[in-house]
Length: 183
Image 1 (cartoon, one colour):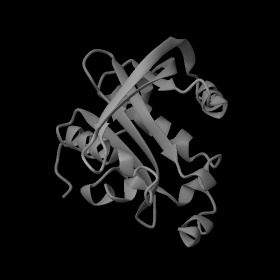
Image 2: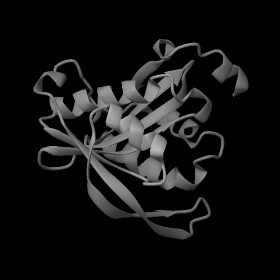
Image 3: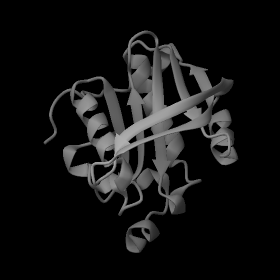
Image 4: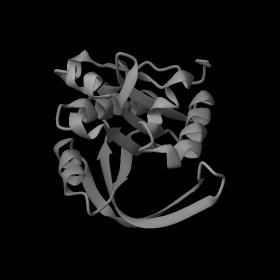
C-alpha cells in the first residue's frame, strides 16, 4: 500500500468511475472497512438495479477513494458515504467525486443533494461548506448490518444534515450506466 500511495502525485492521476464487482473486496481497504462488507455488497446490488451509484477514484486499479450515492424517489439524491484513504486527503479527490456525484444526480432529474456528517468531524463540515453545502439541521442516523461473522449490528449516531441545490447544467456531462452488470 505504501508504494501505491507514494506514487500518487496529484488527483489527476486517478480514474474516477463506477464501482465494478472486482472492486468490492478492495473497498474494505485492507480490513479498515471489513465490518461494512454486507453494506458494501448491498449498495453494489442497488447500483446493479440502477437505484444507487458507487463511484471510486482508482489509482492503478485500486480504489483510493469511494462515494456512495442513493438516487431514491423525488427530487433529492443522497450521498451517504465519501471516503478517501487518510494519506491522500486534501488532494482534491473527494471534491472530484462530489462533483461527479452532483452531475450524476442532476442528470437523473434530482434538483438537490443531501448528506449527513458526524458533528465531531469539523474537517468534513468545512469540506462540504467549501463545496456549497449548507446545514439543514440535525438528525440521528441508524445503521444496520451484519458483522463478517454474521452477528447483527445496530448503532445510532447524531449527524448534521447538509444540502445543496444542484445546477441544471450539471447534468449532461455525467453519463453512467449503472444497471448493466460489470462482473
